[in-house]
Length: 134
Image (tube, rainbow, N blue to C red; front, side, top):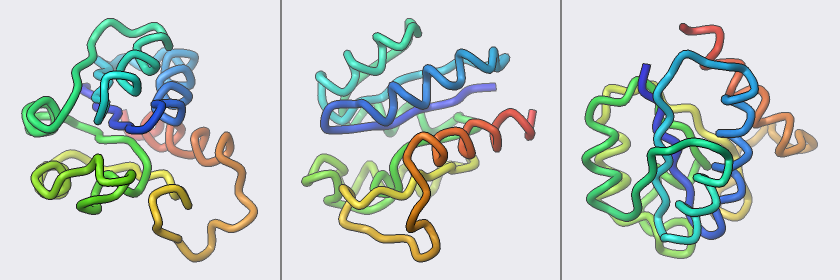
């Protein structure tokens, strides 16, 4: 199973996701894709070895992913303060992978029904979804 975790800005959500996946000992190849080098470096600190940065890395790695995990903004062009390019959003959207998206107000998107759910709870739900599908 190939899981691609995509994050931007400082990479803290991606790092939390990766740490939770590693603690669940998922039988998976986890790849960190940062929209910038800071995000990539921070996600790699969670303890995985595979990471890359930028638009082309996103496009290449989502092609054969089983899961794509990240903030909801990864499927919206120009979100994350412009770090998600239209090409990235299209590649993620067209990937056959199952997308597990974390609601985030930082992405300038709001998902009705998520008020009051803490980020760590959302991350637990996301990782649980992957664990139950294998």
